[in-house]
Image (cartoon, rainbow, N blue to C red):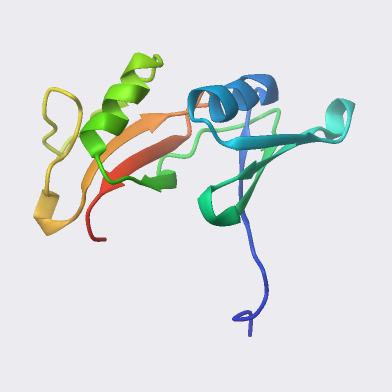
Length: 130
């Protein structure tokens, strides 16, 4: 039914300005602000051109699951760069992480490290096959 229809993902944040700085400056994504006043939203553009819609929500509750995964060729370098930019890697019970916060080959899956945006939403960098 929707196999030929374009689609995009979206998520909420509690502070659009903090999100713009984080996604644009810290992560280096293309960020476009649209609208005015209370109708402002952000459009993120991921590698390959995939769009993501970010909208403010007054009663925002951070996602407790990973909303965005960034596949990288070198997870150690990606984590080092994020850490250098002030991002803290998250640690979760049941996932043994190394000193950098990277979970290495958990159950044969990709190497992964989780972190949060300023609104508390969970993101990850990962290396390897899904």
